[in-house]
Length: 398
Ligand code: C5P
Image (tube, rainbow, N blue to C red; front, side):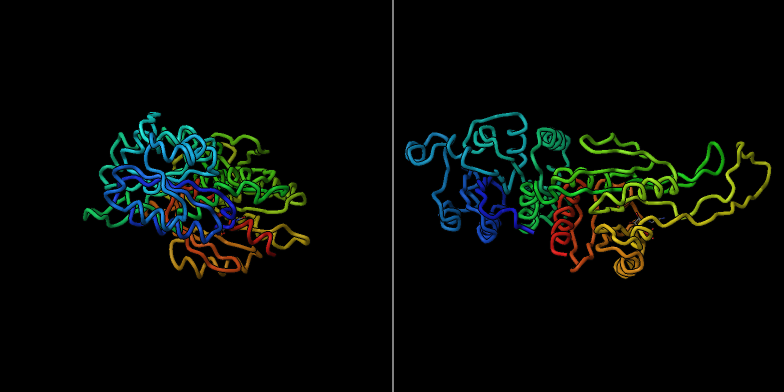
C-alpha cells in the first residue's frame, strides 16, 4: 500500500521523544518503498537517538541546525524545504505541535515546515495526559485546519507506564498514510457513486423508523474518492453534515427513494460504494394523521424494502461494488457471507454497538476483497483515504 512513495523525496523531522527510537525503522521502510530520505533533527532528539544512526540509515548527510555554515554551503534550509515532496515529523512532541501551530520558526525543523510548499504530516508521540490536554487538542485542531496531516497517535501502553492515546503510530501505518498523501490520481477519470447515512421510513407525519448512522463514513469516502481524482455522486439519506463541495449531491429520505436514485445513476458509474445504512423494512401503512396513544400496546406491520446493493450486484454489466457490514457479533463470518450473497467485490466489516463504529468519529475495520486486511482504529478521514487506496488497487487489478 506504499506504491505512491516511489521516487518521492521525503524530509523526515525527528523531535525529542522516546519514540525517536523508531525513526530509523521509518527511514528504512521509506527507502524500501522507493523514497529518498533526508533527516533533520532537533537538539532534544539527540538525547534519544544519535545523529550518526540517522545519517547512516538515511544514506544522506544529517541536517541539525538553522545556522550552520557548512550545511548551508551544501544545501541551505530553504533549498531543503524546496527539495522535499513531503515533510514528515515522526515523532512530533507536544512542544513541536504547539510551536508549529503558532507559526514559530526558531529552529531548523519549524523553519522548514513554514518554508516548504510540500504537504506536511505529523506523527504525534507523547504522554496520554499531554495528548488529552485542552491546549494540545486546540493545537491539533489548528494544525488540521491548516491542512497538516496528522497520523495517529495510537492507543496503548506508553514508555512512562501510562495507558491511553499518545503512542506514536506504528511505522507501517505512518508509511501507508504518507503514501495516501500522494495518492491523488488513484481514481483519475473514474465515476464513483456513494450512498451514505440512514433512511427514514415514515410511521405517521411526525414519526419514522431509522438507525444510528451519522453519514460520516460515507461522506469521508466520497471526499477521499474526489481527492483521488474521481467524479463523485453522493446520494445521502437525512444527516446533519455539511454538503461536500465539488461533487454531485442528492438528498433522499426513504430506502425506496435511495433505490430509485441509485438505479438512475448506476449505468453511468465505474465504482459503487454502498455505505448507507438502509432501512430493511418500512411500514405497510403510513398513517395520514398523527397516531394518538389511546391503546396500551400497538403493532406496526412492516414490509421489506428493496436491497439496493444486492440489486446492483445482479445487473449485467455492473460496476465494481464495495459494501459495508456493521455487525454486533461474528463480524468476519457475517461479512464474508454478505459479500457473496450480494455480489460485492469488496466488503468493509466493522463491529458496532457499545459506542463503536456507527455515529462515532473513529472506526476499526477489516477489509475483505481478494485478500483480508485489518485496519486499526483511526479517524474516519484517514481511514477513508486508506480504504480508497485499497479499493483503487483492487479495481485496477481486476
Ligand atoms: O444486510 P446489511 O444491511 O447488513 O448489508 C449492508 C450492506 O448492504 C451495506 O453496503 C448497505 O449499504 C447495503 N444495503 C442496501 N440496501 C438495503 C440494505 C443494505 O444497499 N436495503
